[in-house]
Length: 144
Image (cartoon, rainbow, N blue to C red; front, side, top):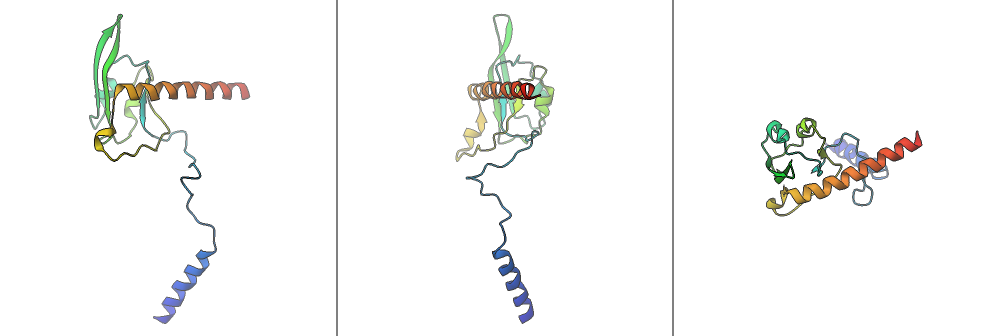
């Protein structure tokens, strides 16, 4: 029994002076892969075809469309993040690439009702993500 205690203390002392295995998260942002599935965003290219809502296995996407100047645009576009499992099927089903997964992982709230994202928020984040991805694409083309 004494030998086991000494072995445990030796392991503890050995690891006390080693570099920690974890990253200091608030100070250093984690490196995310390009295929990271973060918060869903929708840009203003959405044609309200409802394919994303139809393919969603959790039924967490709600779309109600209306005709505006001969084009169909979403009047209501809600995504319930409480039920979303971030599978990405909705992004693959979209014919105009309007719904995307962002790299945003910092979306914690105290109220569950705030986990339902509405059209205005989705479009604001989606258009910002679209602009960011286009600028990154242009920078990559310039460097090649």
